[in-house]
Image 1 (spheres, rainbow, N blue to C red):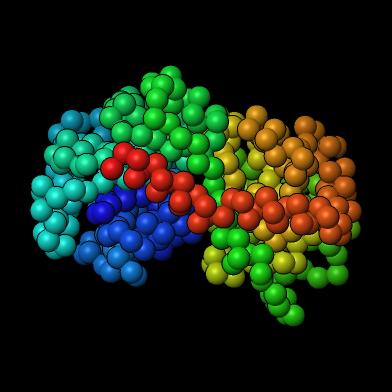
Image 2: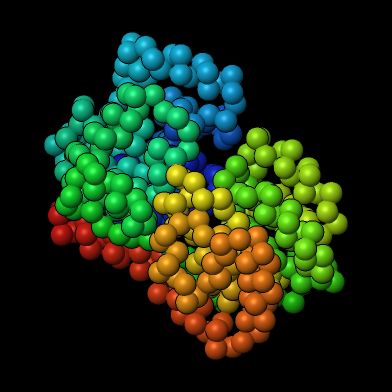
Length: 382
């Protein structure tokens, strides 16, 4: 099969669900990872071979989710013009035609359009893919206020896809307002062996020492509850709270405030390849999300990664979907609950029976299992 994989993140960026799926798809299929132009990563406008049958290319795109406020205002102004949107779309189509030419794909060949990025889906009108697949991983309407024409593009992809994968029941319920059939739940996962088998006698040099570590790995963005994190630092002074990940510009004042606490540590972004070395020193992993329109639909990868390392998870009650994991994680309704749950989780972290339970849960959610589920569905339609 030939799969055009329309991603909303860069191949060189934070290693996420799209990377895991695309990499596995490329073992037996030609996969072209098509990523949007952003200002956070160097663009690659020429088709580049990555590994196996995997290629990547950057194409122009309208940055509706831009973090820079000036760029965002400019985007909204320009994108309100039909002629501007049409120009971008035609340019995107030229890039895709270029891929056809370079890989000697004929227009009548069978190929699949696999969308992680619905904002690139207007290109469908100029092609005739054998299948159109939408992998819906986050609430499209939860990040930022979007223009009407962007929401229409999202609606159109939902209706025109042959089938849809969704990472949570919340997202499935959202999609079912527009269509009822051919929707499959495929939650996130973990590279189980990569995390569970990690062993080392040395610590990363930037980790805090002497106290137990309660940590978070992931995006440090506005959806974190910074008041809660400050409360934890104040009420659990004998614990080092360690955060690892990329930050959003808007959270700078919150981060500066937290760094006034002697037991709060922000270690910056770490490459995926060394994440297990940090997790191996955590006593507890936390997910301190606010409950928002976005987080209600989240199925956090970090839950599976913490579990693969045998680390208990403490989280806020940010989604009704967490009920499914209630026997594995500590769900907190209040700040006080969160404190008590951390203490309970620390005690649980030494119980071998509970650790085995966490690891078995993670193993059942290995990315290889998720890939096989996805392939089974594709082959049933293909």
